[in-house]
Length: 608
Ligand code: F6R
Image 1 (cartoon, rainbow, N blue to C red):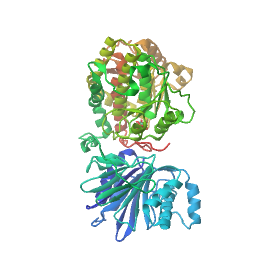
Image 2 (cartoon, protein in one colour):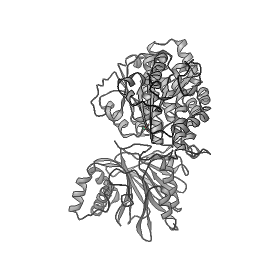
Image 3 (cartoon, rainbow, N blue to C red):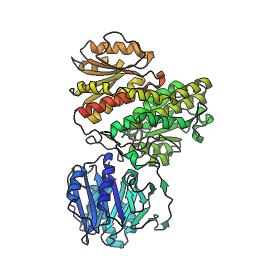
Image 4 (tube, protein in one colour):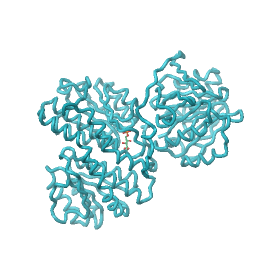
């Protein structure tokens, strides 16, 4: 999604804006632009496409004396991808950048037209910035103009705005879209994401809804909705700049896959004490858990797939019913929620609009909420009744990999904790499971040894336009994630199917050479899986089988086999994730795709 960076200080602003935008590239974007005060007027430079296009246009600007500016990466919502639709927008007096969606932009257009405004772009942003401009001409006060505009705007937003009459200042506000203000030794920053400023500072304050932040060269002031000055405490992120760098790997995605053993261990081990789960949250006491009628998990994409693995684990170990839902469906279908339910929201970014809305819906019905989130201090983490952080560090590649593994690992720990509280597993079983989970990273490390094998299989897969992924039970959930990973970065169409369901229609698509990736890691349904594989093979499918090392497989079951390390069976998804991700990664690399920034995708999906 879009990214915002702003800087005002005593050093050149343009290099900092470009650096900040580069750090925000991972969020996904299709054009970029900056605004700064130069030669006595507000200037904008914009370019469609990659940031390098913008950087090339900025090359001839010496930047001496330009010490304040705002920058933006745009992920198009209203209007095509073009220079003119890129941000910043505005006029000679007022210029701004925006993340989010303005829902009443037609109404604002009509209103502004009656006030004599015309528009250069098709964007909702231009209308919102011109509304701020109009209110500024009326009030002469940028803070009031911002606040009055916020009252008239419907939708989500984070704005950073400059006014030509206040050349060193940046004004910022937000609603439902993240925005941070960060003081540093070189000047003051505003950013939609802490990664944009990590090279200068780890301190930040979240701007809350209704507040306006005013950045000048050496201070940041905050104003409440009724115009009062506010003192804010600054937080320090645990993330460091190195964590957000590629560190010698060709892509962030492969670096992040290789981090999985470390981050899984770092997420799980500190939460195990004396070989028992240590989840010290009032929401998760044994009494509270025993009174849960039903768990709902709401999440999107990969996080939802992690939720499906969580469902299998919780139902197996704790026998509590779990309903997993895509957050964008959950939020609008008036789900049956009761006060003795528990709603778990899973999100890497903690900012996904639909997941946040699902959280708010649950809260409005008085249902306790637990967030499983990676980004510290994100909206979902802050608004939920309780939060379990996944501690994976920054995930930069758009395709989620390490975040998925830590989400699964934490859900396993949660299900062991639930099982112990429910008495569905004994204390001895709890300790064994905890010990095995604490050692899971060793098996994941072993599974990374399959990288070369995955690469050689990718050379075959890259030549296909359709791939099926099949599995039963927990392996079906794995198939869904493996298929998503493959399609989002390699652009090969993939379909995940419950293996037993193929024969009810989809098997008609299998013909000679159709690739089918089969996961067979559940002993209870292993024989059934082998039969399903035989069904597709006998129709000509080329089968790649993911199967644990210790399983004997009948001769001539598959064309290619990936043998997964023999982690205790319940935890098998932790070992299958990395090889499935590696298969997608190498296929995309072979095809020359932009692995870290796949087309049309955004890292943090802050619109619904
Ligand atoms: C796919 C992917 C997405 C995200 C989804 C939710 O690789 O990354 O499907 O999982 O957009 O994002 P978060 O976890 O930030 O809520």
